[in-house]
View 1: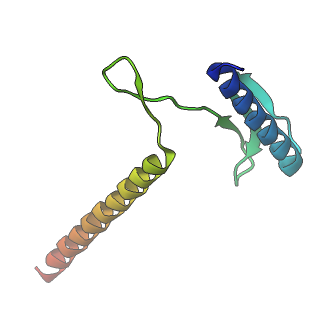
View 2: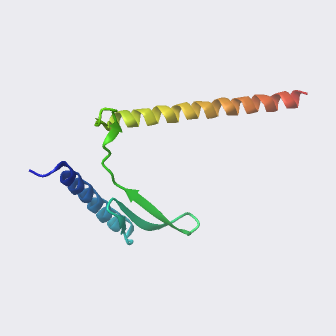
View 3: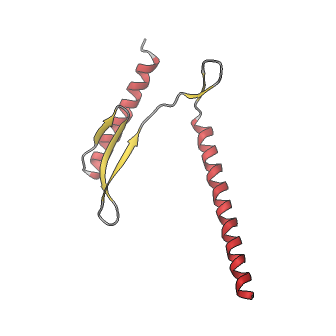
Length: 110
């Protein structure tokens, strides 16, 4: 029976290999390993400037629970929290924009 760390390393390495193959076929460029969990590839922006895309694959443990262990990472909950945060930020931006427009309207009336 393989250890948990060994299984996670195998999973991460397999994912990195799949990503490397995908990027190599899709973009036909060098895909370079930069760490045990990261690959990078050169890309160009709209102006033709060379940039590097960095892709990291990790298997998060979760958060410490205060009892010497971890509360397992829940990707579904993390995604939901992220989406709610983005929605909240969008609402804040909309309110600020409306306030600025109202302020501009006041100044024009004066």
